[in-house]
Image 1: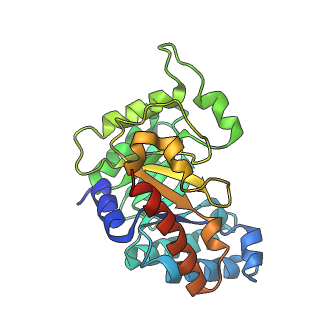
Image 2 (image 1 turned 90 degrees about the vertical axis):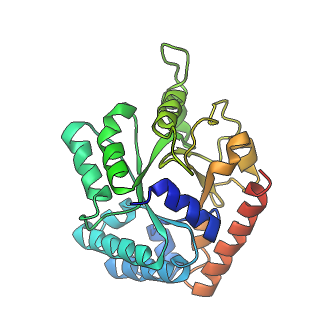
Image 3 (image 1 turned 30 degrees about the vertical axis):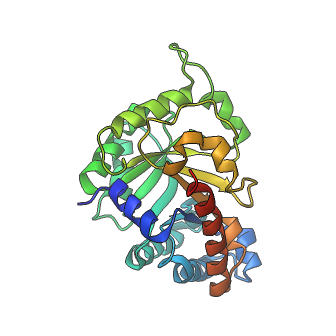
Length: 278
């Protein structure tokens, strides 16, 4: 099976450097005139798939907004994943899972095993039980051509206390995460399958991302305050590896399908202008 890094490289070349989140929180459902229940969730997801599934390189459902409706919400998530994969988009599930031993192996099976109804191209993961604790995810991803995006430098103010703390060798915790992911991607062509999450709102990070050789997911664009131009400050020479991620900036244009497509096209043009000049 082709690696996730290979598929992502090709998808970005064909569709452009853009990830759009599916974040059906109550306020957004209300903005679209939809009920805050499973029916509204299903309608919302179906419209997003119709508008963007055949156009955007990566679509990122946020699992929590489906899980809050229990088993019926998870069923909508399963259906949405299938529809997106059938449309040709890569599916990055935002679940931020992390644990140890058999539990993290079970998470890996849930999202990275092709036999699972929640099977996706890649997922987000938390490394704060140690990057090595995620080994079962990395191993299953490598077996089935999947990807893992590991939290490194997030935009929430609370994150800095942990991520920027210094380890015994003087590196920050975030830099140790960055360096371990870089090791996993060594020798991969054209792009490694193991990425990092680095918030687009955090400014000059003071961290070295140059050896990662994997995708750098940049959430926080649009409604959260960052612009495509801010990516230059955050990522510097690593800009060619960035996958910009928008949610509300695009989704607020709904529920009209044409308006959603226009919003996605607009932010993609901004991203191309920034990343194309990297």
